[in-house]
Length: 114
Image 1 (cartoon, rainbow, N blue to C red):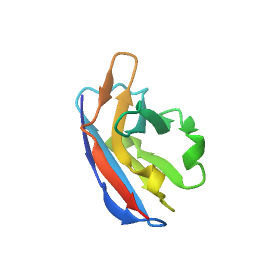
Image 2: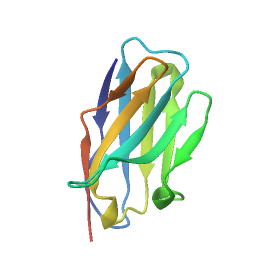
Image 3: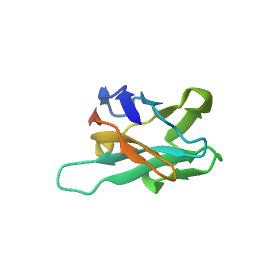
C-alpha cells in the first residue's frame, strides 16, 4: 500500500486549501482514511478520519472548518480546509488503515500566515 499526498502550501489566515491523498496497492474493502498533523516538538494529532462505513471523526479544533471526503471507488481522500488559522500550520499526513495495514504518507506542509 502506498499513499501520495498533494495540496499543501502557504495561505493567509482565513484562506482555504484542499489536500488530496491517493492510495494504491492491495487495499482491503473495509478501511479508514484520514489526516493527522504534526508540529516540531509535539506529537502527531488527529485532524479527521472517515471510514468506508462512513464513520466520521474530527478534532474539536477543526470542526466546522475542515471537511473530509472520500471517493471510495478511487481510494482517494480529500481534506477541505476553510477559514485557516495560524495554529493550523503543520505537516499534514495522510493515513490509511485496515485490519492488516497501517500506512502513512510522506507529509505535506501547510503554512498559514497571520
